[in-house]
Image (cartoon, rainbow, N blue to C red; front, side, top):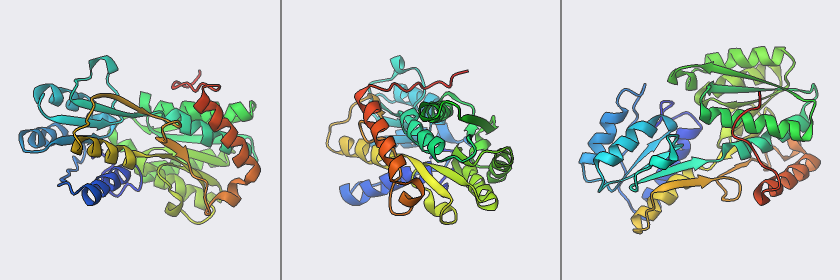
Length: 302
């Protein structure tokens, strides 16, 4: 698992749910490790590779380099990496790179935020300013400006090391300063740091937007406007299922709106917060992204 570990109520927990679903429905044997600060990533991978495992999955972009090297060292083993971020030209054939088009789902929640905002100012809290997290910021900003060109989007990041994804206190400080600067909605892509964003939203009585899975239960009712869901659980389950059926394929598996890899939450808990009109507009935008009429960039504009 990634540095945030189990209990992050987000990315890692979603991957774990996919693993447990595979264990239950496919009857597989499953073991997992949490590498803590990340120092033991390679050792855990190597121990699994030396054993009798059929498939080894690294959860998170921080595994990319180690898992590629491991796949080269153990060509008869199968590997998968969620959020793989190394050059796609150099992927060994025994490695499945599970990537998501987070910018597409983020575009939709950006549109929701801009349409819902009363102040015309919305915020973004990221973990580390990496190419992966910049995809969330890029999509969010583009979606907001697509529906409301004059909206102001303020983006901040929690840090430069892995710990930036598990620092709720820092998340609360950053979000509080954004709310106090006039932002009335904040989207986060920061692991458990985002739990601090939600605390700030509760205190300031403003909206927040969750990430990776439906985070509506992580704050008081009426605080989480929506969540940009990334179906990591489904991606993990499907790669295990393919391996179990002898249908494993290496290379890039790119999952966006079209494939159901990303999306946004609209259900009984938040449909009154969003409203029918905003929902209808966002569904129209979603259809245009899927058809290719709207192109979403992975890189924030200057």
